Length: 198
Image 1 (cartoon, rainbow, N blue to C red):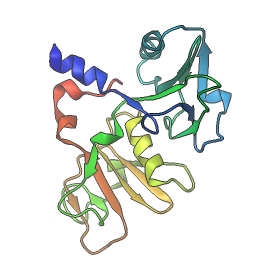
Image 2 (cartoon, rainbow, N blue to C red):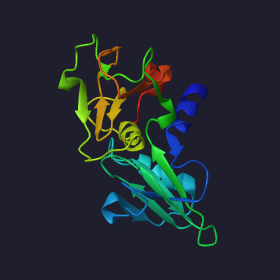
Image 3 (cartoon, rainbow, N blue to C red):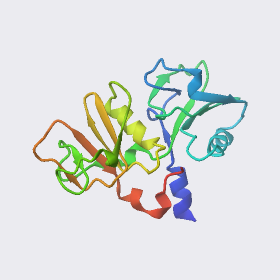
């Protein structure tokens, strides 16, 4: 029970670290109301539960301030945030899914493109391409943690202007090419109690 409880706790991750943050989409000014649904709720825990009660895979995270709960359902999760002056209100922005801290370097080399079982195994069936035109590394990570495809995200391959969300295990890399970032979910990601919530 303790392990399962800890796993559930780790499904929630503060966006932008500690601070008074409001959730945003692609950038700090992206507060498109289509990204979320507003509810009158008076506690952070109730707001979390409301999000988790959604149909499988729809809860991407929450923004909470007293009496207001935004349930975020944006397709690629919560990437950005806005700093809010404390005198205005207390805001909490939490991402739901794999914490980005679970994404680690794909050893032994992190500057080469990800591959499946061999250096030439780059079959597009192993990953989904993020449709964003110029995704940053942080947006690529957020897309992985909020991924709701047919399989769980196993890692990412990022290069300027391109993000691959991997759904097959990353077991190799291409040593002939550099300029890439290849990251995969940590060891905990393969344990049963760490199954993602979708």
